[in-house]
Structures are given as structure tokens and as C-alpha cells.
Amino acid sequence: MDIRILPSNIANMIAAGEVVQRPASVVKELMENAVDAGADQVTVVITDAGRTLIQVIDNGCGMSPDEAVLCFERHATSKIASAEDLEDIRTFGFRGEALASIAAVAEVTLKTRREEDPVGCQVEFADSKHLATVETAAPKGSNFSVRNLFYNVPARRKFLKSDNVEFKHIVEEFTRVALTRPEIGFTLIHNGRDIHVLKPAKSLKFRIQDLLGNNAVDKVVDVAAETSVVAVSGYVCRPDAARKTVGSQFFFVNGRYFRSPYLHKAVMKAYEDQIADGAVPSYFLYLTVDPHSVDVNIHPTKTEVKFAEDNVIFQVIYACVREALGHLDGGIDFDRADVPELPVFGKDYERFRPDPVMPNVSFDPTYNPFEGMPESSGKADTPAWQGGNPSWQGGYVEKREDYGKLFEEKTIPTAATLIFQGKYILTPNKDGILLVHVRRARERILYERFLQAITRGGHVSQSALFPVQVQVGTANRLLFDEHAQLLSSLGFDIRPFGNDTIVVGGVPDGFSCDPDRVETLVQDLLLILSDDHTSLPGMMESAMAEKFARLGASGGKTLTSPIEAQRLIDTLFGCENAEYTPGGRKILSLLDADELEKKF
Image (cartoon, rainbow, N blue to C red; front, side):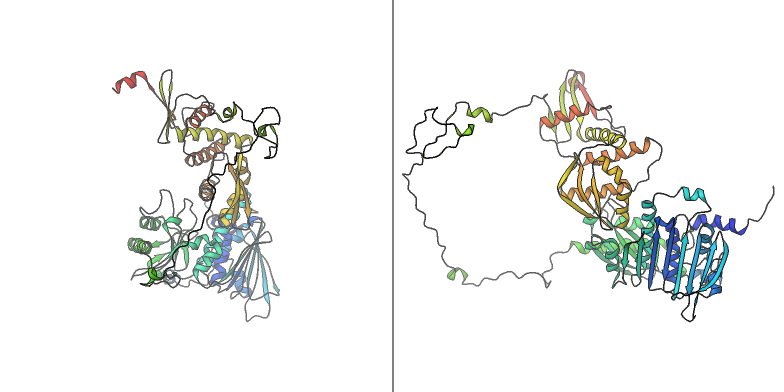
């Protein structure tokens, strides 16, 4: 066995695997460095979802030529000088790994200038090697250009997802940093198009609105609590605004975004019995703790933290969210200035109220509109129902003996069926009584239709009378862009509208076009589209068809007539498998004569 020390460039490439997982990782690290540099304006320019270019420009403090070269070395940092400093971290970056890792897997150009320097400098790195340093004209601050990410690691570049997916992750990282600093202006540009242009916000609520839309702040309540361990502030949504999609749940500690399934449970516990099963409330919770009581260095990307007293923080979050939701149960506030005044009548109102004036109606009780009409000969004129034009002067309307036959009730012969609670169909057959589970039958029917639509195309769509506009946010709108062809093949007519909104013009046959149902449908679609699916041939199509079928079956109309029930049974028995749902649950059950006899 030969043990050797790895060359620095290979070591940096290995380290980069932890820090730089995808283009969004580069955006995160460079934006956080820009904020730490004291910038009040940060611009992010992306080309081809970060594959070709990631550029982050700030107006922060800038660097000298020597610092511009040194910052690309492993563990080079301006924020840590001693071991004690690790217990008092108040900035984003502190380990000095980001720039070294980025330079190991991309071509990096840095232009920077300090305010006191007459000219700036330009530094170029590639494959962890310093290529050049030259003087250049540059504004105060730093301008990082990262080109051809993973150019020297083709396996990593090959496993990047599509542009829509990668850019969605970039938007998520951009959003997280922008939510930590509402006082800073942020701009995001992709392929020459402005995605976000955020001016410094007056408050956190305005920043949330600018990033996530009006829907994110229309139904939120303030949260505030302060203890000796933690101070909590921010917003949580009203219970009726909770949705099935995950994506607007944010925790921040000391101005840093982090994930915590444990503290998420505290929020969910506060909403207990107030939201539907499967729904998740949106929340924006900012925690402030003593830096000595939190460890932010337990994860390579610093998205997880460890609190010294996490059980106390759990209880504080639960209590303050529960209290905020409790204020929603109050009665009507009659002291509000905008409440309209109710009219007050004096005690003499009845005395002075004018008597009602009734209209004077006259009529002739002897008038007969049919008096004077000619007798019908049955031959003189063409009857009105055959296209004639009767008139009081000479025409007449022929009275036909078979007139009532036009309105005889037409009945469609069906088997004797019974619908029980809208959930089950009971119908006799030669062996006994057949029981059909309505929702599961619909699921099987829709599954086979959707599977055929995905593999062959051509599912039937029904157009909405009025297209429904739904604001979904920038990241979620990219999900619809990514799966536009799939949705179209299933019968959805969904088109982008701006950067964060979609317009639903049609849905598959069997789905409701009601605006409220469409908004709920969009949330369910996001949940399905955001799931990871296997890429094995045939299995992905089957998994997607099953999820869409379950969605369509759960929102189907209630059966009301035997004709509809019989049509459902006929369609079910036209399927390849009428006995089981795609998930293996029974659709049919037969009660034979022996089983019926045992009931008595």
C-alpha cells in the first residue's frame, strides 16, 4: 500500500463536492460573501441556469490585489482569528472554503476595488491555479464571474438537471438570502430577463410580498415572543391559507437561513386540529439567540444548526405561534375606524314615517283574448310548428293530436342500480349483488387514460369558461415550465403569465373548472410535480399516471343517477384491470346468494 498526499488541486476538487453541489451552491456562497462585505446592492446574473455563467456583483468593501489572490486559498478568511471566534459567529461565511472550491471546478474572474484605491484589479483562476492578476478600472466592490461550472468534472456536469430545475434551485437560494436582509437591494437576471428587482424594503412584510407575491402576505398574522433563551419574530399564515405544497416555510437564526425538521414539528403542533390533513402552513420565523448557544458549523453547506437548548426553543415557538393563532378567534371589533355606522332611528320614527302608497291597478274582467279568432279548418294555413307565420289577422295555430309526444320522457334502459351515500354502487348480476367502490373505480379509469396519454398523447381536455389566473411564485412557475409537455399530454392547458403566475385555460375531462377547485388543483399539481420520480423506463410514466389518477378521482362529482352509475360500471369493465386500483386496492366486491342468506 502506497500512501501519498493528494495534490492541492485534487484535494480542492474533492472538497468542492461538499460545498459546490450545483450552480445554486455557487450563487448562495457568493451572495452571502457580498452581504458580509457590507454591500447594500447585490446583482446576480445567470446564463443557462448557471452552466455558462454565474455573475455576482456587489458594492461592498472590495479587496486589495493581494487579498484578491489570497481569498482563493483554502481556509482563507477575514472573520476568524482564534478558536474563540468560532463561538461568536455573526456572519454568513467564515470557513474560507467557498472560493477555493469554486475555483477548483470552474473558471473564475474577480474584479474588485476598495474605495481608497485609485484603480482595481482583475484576478483569474481555473483548476485551482492562479492564472493572472492585472490592474483594471472597476467600481467599488467585487464582481465575481464563474464560467463553465464543472468543466473539468464532466461526470458532475452530466448529472445536473434540466435548466428549469437548476434555475429553480437558484431562485430558492436567492430568496433565502434576500429574506435575511430586507434592507439590501437584490436583483436576479436570467438569460437577459429580469426575474427579481428588489429595492430595499421598508419592512420584512414588503420583502416577502416582493419575493413571493401578494398571496404570501394576504393571510398572515404577526408572531412575537422574547425570553431569556430566544427571541422569536415573523409571520405565520392563517389556518385557512394552509396548502398541501411545501416551499414557503422559512427558519432564520441570527440572520442565517436554516432547516430544522424538529422545530417544524413545533409549528405543526401549534396548528393541530386547525388545518386539513396533509396541509402545511407557510411561515417566516426569525430567531435571535446568543451566538455562543448555537453551532452553525455542523453541515458543509451550513443549512443545519445545533442549539444548546433546542427543547426550550421548541416550546417557545409552539407557544407563540399558538398564541398568534388564538387571536384569530376574537369577536368583531366595533372600535375599528373603518366599520360603517349603523343608522339610528329616533323614538318618533314610526309617528312620522309616511304611509305606503299602493299603486292603483285597473283591469277588465270580461276581456277574452281568444274571442273573435277564426275556426280552424286544418287545411287553410301552414301550422306554426311546421314553419308557418301565424297572425291575428289571418293565421291560426293548428292543434295536433300528437303534440304531447314531443315531450315524452325518454328513458335509457339500465340495470337496476342503487347508489349508496354517493360512495358505492350496488347492482345485481347472475351470481349475486355486485358492490363497486366509486372513487377507486374512477381512479382505475383515469389511471389507464392518463397512462395512455403520457405514452401516446391525446387526452381530452375541457376548456374553462373563464381562464383562471393563479399566483404560484417564481420557483413553482418554473416547475410548470419544466413539465409543460407532460401536463399538455394529460389535458391541462396551463400557460405562464409573468415570472410568478400561471393561467389555467383547461383541465382534463372529469376535473372541475370551478375557479376555487382550479386553485386547489394547482396546489395538488405542485405537490405531484415536485416529487422525485424514478427514471427507469415505464416506471416513471406509471407513477405519474397513478398520482394524477388519484388526484382526479378524489375531486370527482358525486354520483346522483342510475344512468351515471351504469355508465361508470361499463367504463370500468372496459379497463384492462377492473378489479384493483393501480396501488392494489380492491374496486369490486361480490355478495353471492350464500353470503346474503347468512345475513338472515
